[in-house]
Length: 219
Ligand SMILES: *[C@@H]1O[C@H](CO)[C@@H](O)[C@H](O)[C@H]1NC(C)=O
Ligand SMILES: *[C@@H]1O[C@H](CO)[C@@H](O)[C@H](O)[C@H]1NC(C)=O
Ligand SMILES: *[C@@H]1O[C@H](CO)[C@@H](O)[C@H](O)[C@H]1NC(C)=O
Ligand SMILES: *[C@@H]1O[C@H](CO)[C@@H](O)[C@H](O)[C@H]1NC(C)=O
Image 1 (cartoon, rainbow, N blue to C red):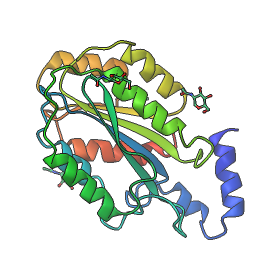
Image 2 (image 1 turned 60 degrees about the horizontal axis):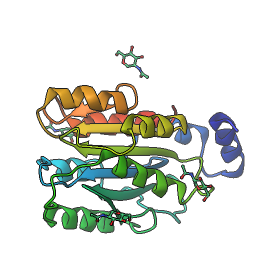
Image 3 (image 1 turned 90 degrees about the horizontal axis):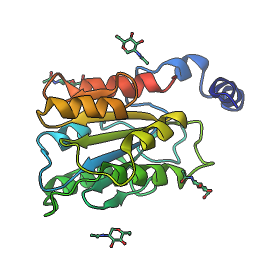
């Protein structure tokens, strides 16, 4: 079923949401979105500004989680990865801006892994599983995966292929190079969705991701 059709079906069953509300994709506190942050926490990762950039995306009046009268809500999940990936928060865990903020503060205080091994594929696969685990629920909400890393790392299966799979399933894939290696930019560009590979060193990444979040609602 096309997203447009889903959109009109939704309109017909949601009398409280007018067409103009649904089309207004510029209000970043009322997005129809599910986001998984995939964060490299290997020993060599440049964590500078990562968690502040993430928290700056969410205004404190945003509806995090599900079960709101106004259905324009955002589910947020977190995966960290190094040699292996860890599901830090699945789509059920965070149900308010406060719990999101606490989670981010805990992540910010958590020491990085001791291993320098950084397998992007394992992080991406964890995001695929997290999204897939609630398939059938909120399918009409746009999905995004946002990766923060500063290296190529290693892989067992090609991150480009996993990226291709995600993008072909309609997921927007954002990458952020948190380091200064230009070659990493070129590499991540091949993994990310078109025009959605960013770097901390060149511009306001919060603003860039926010634009990607509001734009991607109606891709
Ligand atoms: C990584 O995860 C796999 C699968 O869960 C597990 O078998 C393996 O022992 C883990 N490796 C490390 C180093 O934790
Ligand atoms: C998603 O989940 C379904 C059902 O649990 C499974 O059959 C399918 O292989 C999964 N897809 C991926 C990409 O994990
Ligand atoms: C990406 O940016 C280029 C240059 O601004 C533009 O021509 C192209 O349409 C963009 N692609 C997408 C998918 O937005
Ligand atoms: C970056 O963009 C965000 C969102 O638009 C804005 O709130 C913030 O002030 C900007 N930061 C800088 C340093 O310009």
